[in-house]
Amino acid sequence: MRPLKADMGVLDSVRETVSRYDMIKKGGRVIVCLSGGADSVCLLRVLNALADELNISLSAVHVNHCLRGEESDRDMRFCEELCGELNIPLTVSHVDVKGYCDKNGVSCEDGARQLRYGVFEEESRRLGGALIATAHNKGDSSETVLFNLTRGTGIKGLRGIPPVRDNIIRPLLGVTRKEIEEYLQSIGQDFVTDSTNLTENYSRNIIRHRVVPVLEGINMNLHEAVSRLSESAAEDEEYFDMLLRSVPHNEIFRYPPSVRKRYIRKMLSEAGAECSYERINILDGMMISGKNAKYDLKGNLFAVFNDGIMDILELHSHENLLFEKAIGISDDSEIIIPEFDKTVIIRRACNDIFRSEGNVQKKLTNSFVNCDKIQGVVTLRNKRDGDCIRFNNRGVTTKLKKHFNSLKLSKHERLSALVMEDEQGLIWCEYGGAAERVSPHPFTDNNRIVEILVRKTADNDYRNYK
Image 1: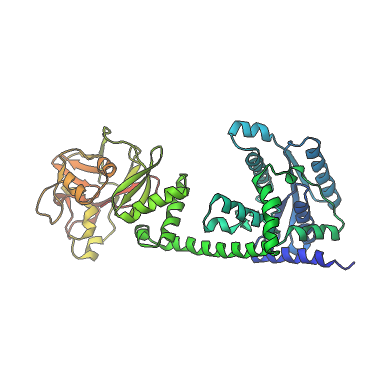
Image 2 (image 1 turned 60 degrees about the vertical axis):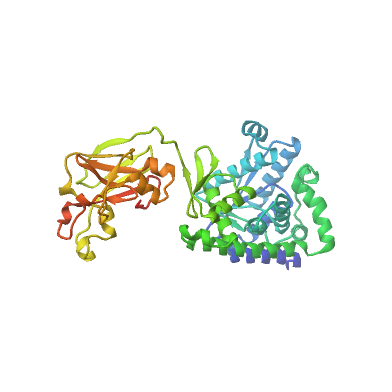
């Protein structure tokens, strides 16, 4: 029997979406999130029709939220019968939405979604990392954009629902609800209706039942127009993400507001801090001022600014914290100092490192020490009042307080700055380097030279503090 036009339209749209976003690999496993409603039933039937063509293994999962009594059980039975007819494996899970919401202080809508996706992820893991296919359509994406606009959003919120997010795919995003219903009618497939979708108890339902019809009266191709907007916004956001990855951390403050604010939002998000419009504007103002300052984000978490460069740090008071430890300096070692979230790395210099430099009194000597010049036991500690050191080529002994002030170090950086001393005084300090009396010369045996570095314990890359 020749397929009807609506049938071919939906199948072609799904083919195009799957191909365009490279959603499904040949031989992959796909789980359909099946509620029994028109959208999810359509998704199940379409992917089942394309299963041989896509070379996929198909299964389904149904979550009974136990919120609508007999209606919830009716939906579950419908899904069981449908999957039985199509010979598609189905997993059914019951969840206690009310209990979860009471325990976690979330709304019924949010709680149901969190539990639902938890079941989907668990089923994906059980099946060896199967893809999770949800039935969001073009109208759902438009409603998401409108919902985001009402709450306030930037370009990111205009992207609507992403076609692919991690292991979640949405093959129906190119299809409207009208096309879905026409497709189901063309193949003689019925579906169930969730009575809560007909109420206006949720903001999304108000947008769907009241706002969208008014906008469709202005433009009958509303969903197509919003879809084009979302596609354009997604492309712009992708470009800005790529730009942020290429801009050096210490150059962000030189860029336009669109780049700076995205960078600030990204840092806040990664740190788990609030990303409000007002907060981002405040931090952006602090960044472009070029002043040294800090902004309290939450708890011990601060946004710290030094000459326009922003870092997010967990700062603790070091006013009365004293750290001191005797160490060996002639062998490779790593000394973790949890009090300051720092690791001191001591490592032998590479062969001929000074021979290639030609002049030992260059920047390399800032972190290199000649072990033969050390007198007695070496102690690693944090800076104390009155500490002094004589750096290379200075011709004068300098107080660390004055040196740190010249570097415009924050109070936190000064209090947690590390130094090393032997029986004759300081031989090295963080943010400065080695003292003149222990610095190597061009003819020093490389086996007696060590490099001293400091990094944040959580970082992967060594970080010189000079």
